[in-house]
Image (cartoon, rainbow, N blue to C red; front, top):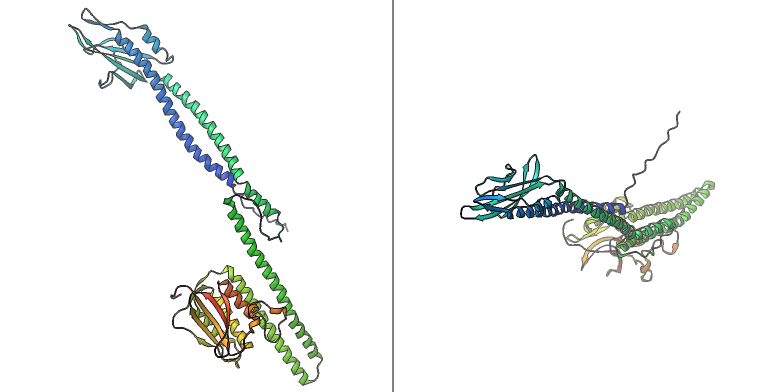
Length: 468
């Protein structure tokens, strides 16, 4: 059979932040350069028009000055200086026309059209003439003689090749200057971005060089904008360190607690295997049963504690009515309780008592408190819900002596005293309740009741009243 080699496709490498910023700056500069080139072209064309229009205006004025009336007739003496002036536009063709007072052409190109209106003494306009676009200037001069009066018009025009070449030259030089400036800005922006992002590279190197087991906070000098990133990483590593430490401690404690009862069960089983006396065998089997019940309860509490620890950060919080939590805990406790045990009594207010939390975790905490009361307290056992100024409480009360005042400060510690579980007590019930209370922003509250009993429960921040 042919061997099939699986190729793991790597995700495409995404562009760096520096490249993205550089592209963004380049796009902005591209728009700016486009606008600058458009403006440069318009400016070059305007400058070229002004320069060559002055040539046309000067030539038309010179020709107009050489128009005279001799013997009652208009006579035009074309000055050579006018054509020398127009010859500055070397590659352009020159056209001219002198129009008399009655509209006749005195000299020049008779089909060269004047502008449609004559409101100004000197008028600049563009027309299509002789198959090309030409630019023309018309100048008027009044004539007042005895035999002749009116206005003489002088039209001077040439093609626009030279002025377009001048406009292109101006726009090209401006484009080179703007393009060089834009390129320099892009390069400087890239260097500036790389320099600004250098602290991120230091953070990356610090992360990559860190030992996987080292979860201590980072001490890196960074700008203010990146301090939040480093602080977030440090907060995450502290949470991870606490979680790993808690898991390691929990595993070590759980192994210690399970080893002793399992060893005892094994030893009792070995005794039972060689025992021939029925009475002794029954006693051994009873001890094995008691040990098995203790191990089973410890395993249940270990799983419950692990589930609650997981849900602390994983599950979203919702509005929860503590009355409903108490009823669910009472129902589950009653369904799993031994026949000899009396069911817990509910003491609930009429109005809802609302907190923000995880219903499953709260229910497990109450169930553990009830089981703890069954194990160490005296009936009747009461599940009580109450509202206090700014707080809500769900507690379990019984008629037992409760925890001695000297030990109440460490009541929520897991496996107090590091003693292995004996009898039916697993040592995790109060620890579970304490962790649930702390994860909900509350605390574990204990007090002696007026009827010589003991009450322990959760005090939690209360939200606004309403139906969850």
